[in-house]
Image (cartoon, rainbow, N blue to C red):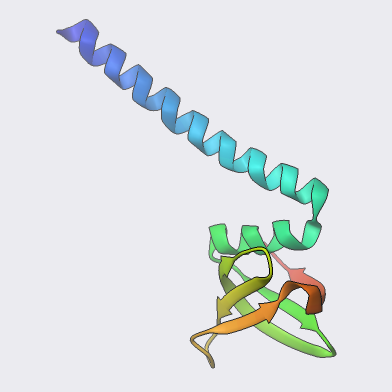
Length: 95
């Protein structure tokens, strides 16, 4: 019984570590491919704010969603902000 509990604990810890490192690998691979998308993903995962520079406007927000065409976020003034990814000129972030 004791060995079975140790085995279960070991498997649980291994799966948690594997899941955590897989998420980090996703960010690292995304960073190499597309730094804008990786910064937006990091904002979503860490719940930290970014400033999106789009068409001469600066939009401060926390990312709440990201798909192939749009980034969704929120800030103190708006509960939902949606920006097309192809309209983004740049992003500033301080994580």
